[in-house]
Length: 489
Ligand code: SAH
Ligand code: SF4
Image (tube, rainbow, N blue to C red; front, side, top):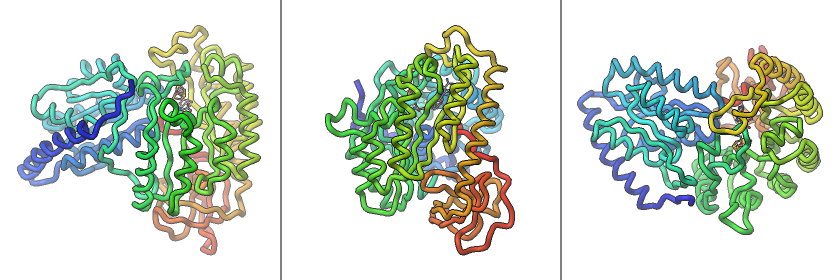
């Protein structure tokens, strides 16, 4: 049973928040400075969206935000479990907070999210990180005020393992957004697909959709707040509404959002190819506020591997859909996720993946080395691929895709594209960075505020670089990598 958290339950959390606020205010007077929080986030966009809610709740408790852990009175690490590397990073960073706790014994340290939704990791934190005050799985997020209040009053460490349930949906949790003009909008949570390599269904529970009214109201508020770029989030947005509505699905939701008044775009991720339909493509083509961008993870070009991954589509059906999308949506930016070194992946299988990349020609690919995940079927498949073979294949894939991405980008040189500006580039403060409607990263020179649109004339294809049309050409090419870094998973 999916639990819809009631207004009364949320109001109860508000009562804990109010009590904490008094304590925080008293502590700030004693110390003669504001009390601060820092949220450290690993993983996907859903985690980023969750962290904005954690920040919203902490801010309602009276804490001020800081990006510096050593300046914080509360640190929350929001973790990822998709690959071992992400878990190791979160554990290592948590380990570094030991010395902060030694300096400030009142520091409150919490670890939450997908990693600690696994019992063995929750136990790890409990026994090997005695300075961590609280740890809680993804289903407890909305109860953060109660958890913090519990720690403050009972002086006991708290470890909350997600109960065996289908998961919950909590509306009206306070939110503090990272950015004023780009926003995440979760339309659903969890996943029912059980790809054999993936831990997500185990740590985020069953697939469940928010009510369409709640989504549309949130979108309206975002648009009224000046948000220009909304990204709808779900592990498989194509199954939005399943089990909730009979004749209303993702295409209908997209259409309704597209019809809202305002100057904004609405994009989405992720689409599972088994459920992405021609109807979805037609809707995208028709909706002028839906940009020409599609993230459609293929994972492997070999049908045998796809079957063992439990992906439920073939390369041919996938390719047919891509051909249809390209025909209907001119200038489509197409991206994918790929896994190399899945158990039993032969050299021949891997070459099929390389051929798939050459045939489809993605704008960008997020490639991942297969990482065995506890309690997933693929972790106990025979024929695990040796690390050195995985790495060698990963490099070959990167080489090929870098060349393809560069060739695609070259077609942009000389063209003027609309870019939503994100302000000065992290790599070179003398240039600005932003993204096209299709979601491509662009570096450019000229004057444009963060959150403003600029028409940029592209002059360089390594990363798309250019200058605001009508302004001065750039003095130099920024030293960014050929392609944006893979997702932070
Ligand atoms: N729901 C999304 C993906 C979520 S996880 C979808 O189905 O497309 C994001 C990506 O991480 C996946 O697409 C996959 O490429 C990668 N991934 C997931 N589990 C992995 C594992 N065990 N090892 C390596 N990569 C993995
Ligand atoms: Fe994981 Fe597959 Fe669900 Fe994506 S669709 S979250 S890869 S199980």
